[in-house]
Image 1: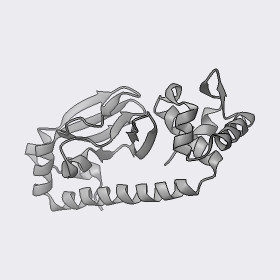
Image 2: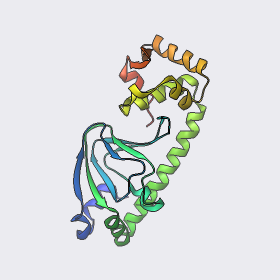
Image 3: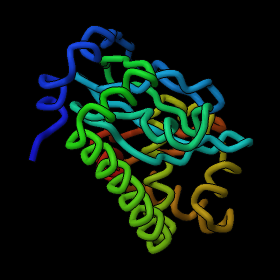
Length: 209
């Protein structure tokens, strides 16, 4: 089955001329919620993360993008505004393609259309499984995963105990016990009203894949 790079190499000439190469530094926002959606992105190098951010700042990851991958296509079919945020996890090099050129590409290549649909289905399926799995985690595992996600997004200084309680879906006393256990294991701790990572490698083991 063809991959994204294969489709890029075989893209119609009119589409290829509209591919604009762009770069983003580590932790830089690429797309943000409410932004008018005028393009899709093809990630050529680096990693990026799509996430939802609640009104109180809580971060809920929805997908992790590894090169090569496509994002922004969901909004092409569900509205003119982005519904998620996407930020660079590492320095990223991408192609940006206008919404109209992307739709032109899909009209010209049915195999590419099938590929795009399969990616949408995969994302929806993986997120359904992810949220179901999260509900089965212990409080400690939910706390670790939440702290890991905020740390990867470069937002750990903004994570409060109140937000952690909301994200972990557990009472404060249970979250406090989990935080104390993680500190005892040398993974992360809570000091001076902030979380501090002690072992990044151990913490990253709890990141959603």
